[in-house]
Image (cartoon, rainbow, N blue to C red):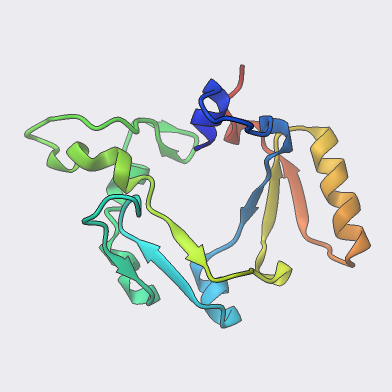
Length: 148
């Protein structure tokens, strides 16, 4: 979705500088008691499987996230590719778009880190957090975005 935004193919999309990442873990969300669901691939495909137990995270094909070559900590390639030696590459794109959704809202206490595109957005987020008495960590992580 962010890539489509970057390319300009999403009507009325906000600039990347206004988009923030909220980082948490599935374990923190489960511990909060909030209902959740996750999929083994992009939820839009009809054969995506839905789960609501942390034990089922093993159903996601994690290889496509962490196999070399890496960009930082994650696999560089997203594209599907037909390769008899690597059959899991044929669905790489949809698996890497697996979704973890939380019902209605997520408590701020579940957020471990907020990533921003630039210092201006970082400062604005920090000001908002102060208003709400939060000490959540905010970092400028421009490498999480598509740079021009």
